[in-house]
Length: 364
Image (cartoon, rainbow, N blue to C red; front, side):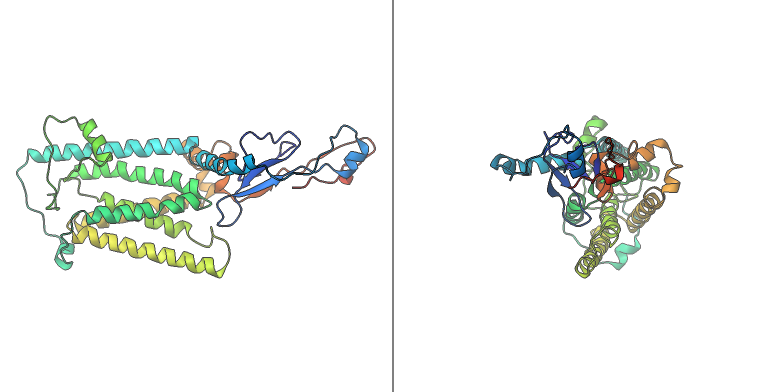
């Protein structure tokens, strides 16, 4: 670092100058489940170089961190977390996601306004309703959806691929919102949920009402095919089953068993969520079927082509390559997508009368 090198996955503490000979606090993400590790590094001047050149400064021994440095450690780590999740690619993905959600909510408001002009119609026959018991607990589907989404937050924050998971969530969830906005408007099915009351009016402003839906201050009844709750639950379960595997976790029987238990738990939660959506008559069975099938197809397709197949990704549009890899794939604040590797830490020195291979390398 003192000679301009770089460690992938590491961040220098704020205010430190890595090009200035001395000590600096560096935070690295190792190949383990540990979120961040703090290292104190000090470049070691080669012994042969000290004998041959008087220009190399002598370094003092690394002293223990002061009380001020110890107190600043949590804030430095928080700053690193903020940087990792607020890159240009994250902001672009968040904008895509928010715009897709807002447009989907606009279509939902329009559908309710259209339903005001139509005579009320009873729900159509549904096979899932005939086979499953009717649950009348209000808002159970909303509660189940919230639990599954909130339970996925630790995976995004503490997984070593957390920033990549968040970016891919923005892209895939936003894509599903865009697709849903067309799907719910193509065929207007009778609202299935008896406890939902159409509160739309002809004088309301669609754009503002859409913002109220996003804030949880308003609801709609006519957005039927396909189910947005199904999309949310399916993405949460797919994230756990994709990233909670031996490929991303440390080796060991305990980690393998814990990962398998987590994957099975989220599969059970997903099946329970499907059951709740249909049994409460929150949606028709076909809404759940199409939503789960389409979400799984988009998730598998993106990961197969853009995540696990670099040769195919290289042929994709430039914006998609940038979103997945970055500008030149050298961003230090997005290095959580890779494991910690030492890169370019060899310093070649040439002194008069001293062969380069006799010079000792620096140490960390």
